[in-house]
View 1: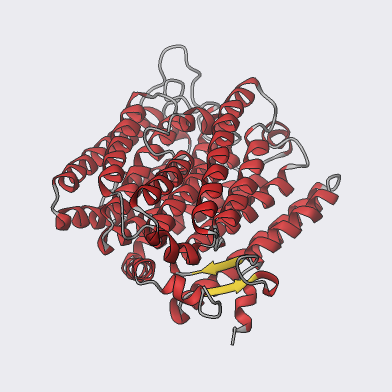
View 2 (view 1 turned 135 degrees about the horizontal axis):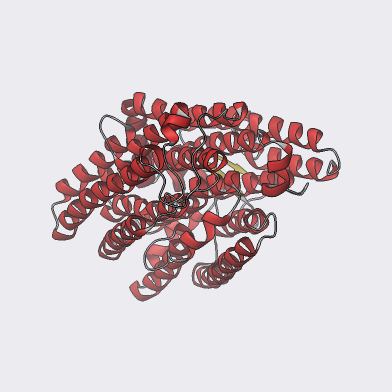
Length: 506
């Protein structure tokens, strides 16, 4: 008998989706819009916390929407992995919304100037939740499209030339990936007669090797584009830095991780018997090195962080490519850690831009004397991103390095070396921002930094809260890593398919 608690599964999608409709009707009442958005985004972390508890204590939770069974039914599934991603994503979207609410009227006119921001942001949240809960590939496609169409609007808010140019690149790349995804869905359905993930886990191994390989590669390419994995990463550094500060923060924290989640889900549940380790490990190494090389060469903080975002996608791909319990645990832990770190850093950069009038390190200087609090807010997540012990970035990287050493293959050892080098260069990139923006004198011709500043209270408290979440992950690294171990075990032991199909004749 299905527990009534499984009826919670649609709520992380429905609550923001319904909120988006209400917020759209309140387009001429911005305060009411903000209140509706806040209430919806407050409710989602509460719901996802319950789902995480259920997934960890009672196992995989599933719901056939409307009571329909396959091949017509839509399954929503929450296991340990999806529940963790839901919870972290809901905390990030709530924090970013509060940060955006803290903008003054003048800043709001420039950064989020139209009443469509709040309903679009809620639709983005619903799309992310739908992608994490999707129990079939078509519903995963729908989740991607919801968040992508929302991101098209958010990326071009304000209509500046830079945002339209960056948005055009972003739209073209993602329309291409969506077209490939539809082609993949067609091929999968033609070969197996279903797109339900649980059923596919049983039917795909029955195909011949060539058919399996073709389907696996096209799905991998689709999700690699969305995750910005080498060689399909070049769209990201030009797209994210031009967006408004709250939009950049949520993009950097979440959008590529939905692609990483899709790779992790399909490679383990659908293709656990053929992990494509060499391909993924080579892609991981090149993603790390190309991304961090780009970061070292930049002088604009948002672009530096965008390139480090690409490079650190390589760490997650490293864990997936190893296809071992230790590697998957490390990838899961590092994904949760990196979502919060990137969001925190981009929120702080929004404050830096407000104080210094720029995010170019050539036009900043002595910000530490102008705002010691801002200096501390940047320093903590920057060191965490670089993997300085005992912070969570160090814990995640150490877990992945240990998994690589235990694997012992030449490619795994090469990834270990590449991971250490990437971490050192990340530290160099963060130190460059820190020294030139917060301590060094501005270059000749740059404006003098203010003697002292008053940071916007709500935005500063939000950034502090997000940095606090990153520190909480450090404090709770042991239990969280244990949870990641259990999540990795669930991905590999067949529980997903067994539970979802327990009341269905597959």
